[in-house]
Amino acid sequence: MTIDWSAFTPWSAAIGGVVIGLAAALFVLVNGRVAGISGIIGGLLRPRAGDFAWRLAFVAGLILAPLAYATVAAYPSVTIEAGYPVLIAAGLLVGIGTRFAGGCTSGHGVCGLSRLSPRSLVATLSFMAAGFVTVFVVRHTIGA
Image 1 (cartoon, rainbow, N blue to C red):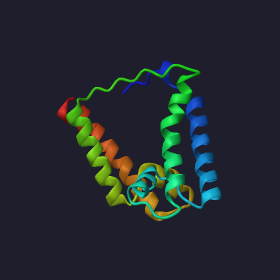
Image 2: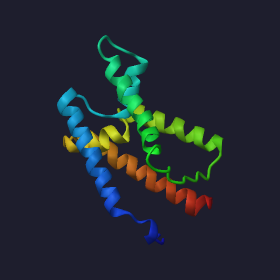
Image 3: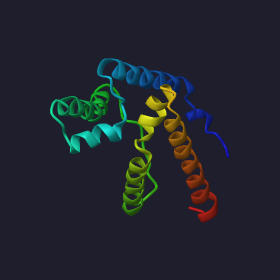
């Protein structure tokens, strides 16, 4: 394994992590809710009275933030080396995994761990282990 040191950006990654942590903490303090994306979107699909507007605003922010960013800077280049069938299968597997885990990586990894939730610790360790195994199998066993 080699590290592309020219693309290694620890300061921007650390600042991004701090901003995400502060946003999640502020969200739970102000709204009393965990900022887990799967739960927020799931609530949009099964709306309850008085619960729809903040969820819609949250998702709108996720969509509008990159558009606002594009007005001041260029998007970073992204290369996806997978076809549509693989992307669709991956999306379905992630969706199934979030249902089994009772939440997504953002909910468990950022919000659950900060609340010292044992369930979130197990879920996050499972997400990470599954990712490590998947990368190993795809890169070293299958040879993709």
